[in-house]
Length: 439
Image 1 (cartoon, rainbow, N blue to C red):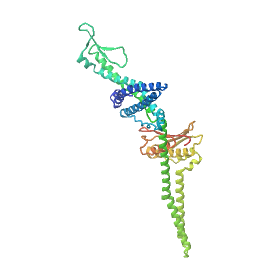
Image 2: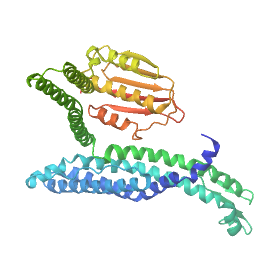
Image 3: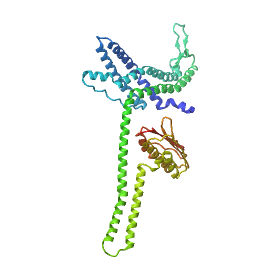
Image 4: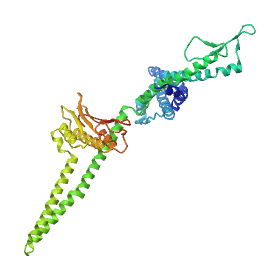
């Protein structure tokens, strides 16, 4: 990082937003954490007694409700000041009957994770206050010459007339106490203030980074809820993809092969009419009709073959490596192939990998301006299939930019795979597709 960038950091919006987040979250962090600690400690202690167990359970429930509320406050502050937007957790489970509702609320995983965050926020909030102290001391020290000019030196308590003590220089770390005894010495305080302000954003960022991790881990819907939502989304994508495929097949059959076959039937009907009408046979006319029917039948077979290849490429019958070699050989941009797939994945994974490679090579030809490309497919020991396409083109490829990468990402997600795009301006571009061994 350049010196100019380091100097500019304290004046960036991000630095001030992170400092404001530490300051705004201080009261709910400390007060809420202390209140929750008291509620949970009393509740846990009273539930062990026979007489006050009901009171203890009620205190625990109150603590969980408080934790959820405080979690919402911290989520809101993080979203407003940090741009850290976390999906709200699911609502409290209903339960049936009084005992069922109590049991459901005591088993509320979201509430307990929120309680864990609020308790962890106690030391993090204290660290946030310490980070804010860096900003305050730095700003106060910058005013040292002005304070000296306005207030001068302070009389030393219990000393003789004319005796005074220097102006204290504030620091966020214990330096043993520094004083500015002269006006020139106040500029040392200014220097310390500048250094403190240059360091303050990094101290704040370190605290905020830990807080971000806690928010993502404890205040979100949870791994199970995320997994359920992801499965619902990928199932919807798979259904939409299959419906789109069926519509495309129907459209291609209706507009292509079906029209050709109708023309074949009409041509053969005309030939039959020529043969049955009893008039002298015009061989040239019949030959023209038969040739037209033959041509339409041939074109219909070609279209059906292309349509079947779009559903399942015949090249995959001999394995993914041979299919990718066919793709590389057909490319108008020279492609270097490296394939190492000792164990064949399932047909669904092979098909997705093939179509991903075809789409990525098409992007290289159409959009990259590359002079050469590399296509590689490897299989890790755990069975994970890694497909990688690299080109020496102009770069700048991003997901959702109209180059087909978004469609690939959706197709890959249906089998719990993922796609990673690295494409700086000026290139090179590397797209990596990770696929599990089976769908």
